Length: 472
Image (cartoon, rainbow, N blue to C red; front, side):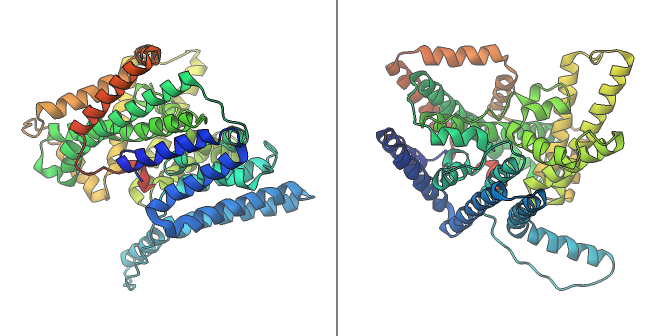
């Protein structure tokens, strides 16, 4: 059930009304939100609903087992069981086919001819997200950062809460569980902010992201040799805008829907293409994932506590695994490796500046932003391309430096310009627009939302385009 469909609008309208009718019956409201979330997930494929339920149940029980364990050795055993179970789920559903195909390719390269073996296991939607969320609960209990939650139903609702279930943000248990366990309170200003976020999220997704995908990005990436270098460059930049508008648009809708239900989800994007270096980029892009990787992977590997060499190894491992988390393809590993190498370079240059007593780079910020943006765009080519051959073809066409551009109509260039300009707009401008909407009387807000709906109707595709991150 996609956020950008009428079916979801009807579903959410029912959930909104019923959940607030049950606001004073807190436990009944939690049960209703759990049932609604399971219905939301089952609308994609009901056969994978038991996986979501079983994974959540197992982690809840393992968290309790760790809390009851008498010694550190027993606690570690339960923790290992948690990690093995959750990573085992990802290994089977997400990486088994990839592993089999990679092993066969290696054997072929060594001169062997193994038989073809394609298992073609279906990937449960959102499995990477709800697995990480559920696993983080057990790890937090093991680290004694939180106490095991007393309510099984509330824990199930935490994992399955539908606004963030499929593509995040990845919410920490200490942030969401207390909200689910507390009585809901209506906030009129928060509701206006939520409507603004939902409208802007849909506009980013449909009017910018989907439009660029259908009219520029997909065409060029499918056959780059048929386009000029300038058109390929526009497609690469267009994909950067598309994936940001698509994913941040999803997040805006998720945060807005949750806020309308009285739940606050964390910020997941902070104008990432305004970053002055790659480290700054990861402070701004998919914040919930980057902080999860830092807290549960990088720090667990030793962080920067075990010497210089080990620090760089930990950075590379974290980003390589972060790339693999996005998809079972070596192109994602290369994407993660590029970002890992850039983070290492950032660290080296920062330490060099510290030794010289320089507070920051001598380059103007605008130059640093442009360099970082284009590095991110280069890495996006591997993220978008299905194979290394496809990525190589894109880079080969870019190297021709040809400039004819019959496939860049004014409408595409205008949408691309709006996407870039809106992203690089100062935060105070965005805040001013949002606050202006919130201060409007209710009927005027309705007129503004109706105008946004008309724009979506005019620019939307005949069929709803799935969100990019649904495949992860």
